[in-house]
Length: 260
Image (cartoon, rainbow, N blue to C red; front, side, top):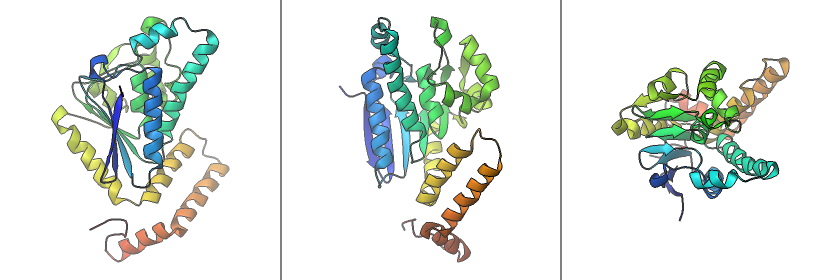
């Protein structure tokens, strides 16, 4: 039984987690499916953006209990291999060349926090709850930490990593973990608005902007970094898409990548 669906329509790939009966929790099989779905959608030329959604009352509750039972008997080496597969899934989402949106309709726990943090944008329903619960069972959110800390910042991470307390969607917005909080019935409206902006932008420019953020974030503003940003803008300005976009703006017309 598949743990997700992948539907492509109008340039948008929607990946939906479809195991509400287990709160869309991870297993090694689910991790492999999510990794493959994002890798596949990221490579497709007809895909301009990717939405990650879920069915049921929870977005993702972290590790599936049966998987946790198996992991309890793993050796250290087996745990390293297992964690490496989760890390590869997170990296695949975070570095996906297409813009990604998390549509968070319900609760997000533990490893599920990594899914949201790895997406470029996130909107949450106002009733959704968030929790980095690992310390409650004597573990740490190690594999997801590079992405969660980037999303919520080190100060909030100190609190929520250490306490394992549940926090509200409003608090997730306050600390920057999600970009907007809305009533559940308004989630699609927000996602559609973001997609409209993404589809009106130059596809190559969007990919380059995403790469720019990944390359520049957390780096010292050095001569090397400044030189790299100079090269990046020179490349995009000299590209056919960059030239078309500027000409369209100057001539007050729609660029060629926007279909009538």
